[in-house]
Image (cartoon, rainbow, N blue to C red; front, side):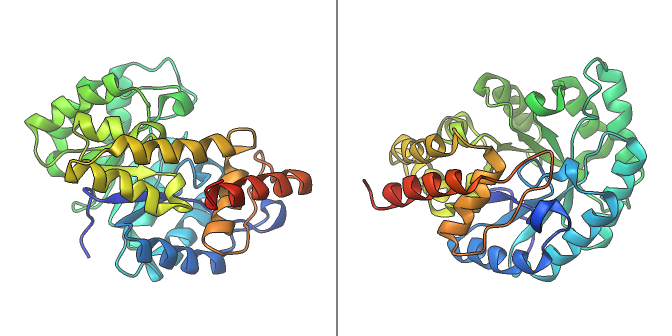
Length: 301
């Protein structure tokens, strides 16, 4: 199946064994089936929710190989952004060789003071090091990367690399910022802007986003799909968004990735995978509290 950026893409969690010692590859296939059966169109592996910065370069390829081998009808975008240009180039090439449909590239995080010319040279170097058909999704998440991808950098990349720059996942959570990327998409129909903030999907669709990337979709794909479906049919997407916000509030008191994995275990009926340090798993008491709150939520209490 061709990669469909107009649907809902899940930023898939990466399952680890106890203490984050290794990737639990056996956990991945049943999770992919859960997502596909719910109607998710594609997965974004090794992103923020996938603990990508904590996964080694060799491990990244192995994760992508497992996802591609069990993707079924899902499209696959592989996160390949690292802080070091050579590692990003290697991770991106490895992912494409392993069968990913495209790679997602972050700005070089930690380098908060770089200017637009430096960012452009970084992205240029990655694209020029990929095989000719290799396609890239830009990934803007300034609260994590400490860098916002400027509009003029996006425009220059489209000018230089054309349709190989598929679009941008904007996780800024600022609708006004996303709207500037959407203005670029109006000029270049092959460039797609993806809503990348679960808390604002209804507003981002209303602003013009062509699809979405979701973290909570790992556990409650029906809710995130419901926001998109409501928007497209002219119904009240805000009502479903508020339902998602109720769930997000349950996760807020806990370490976010550990709570998300706990939620996936509950809703997908899978073993709860571990996180990798510096993230931490929930304590036994936190697990009991969180599960009780989620069960009450699922019962409509």
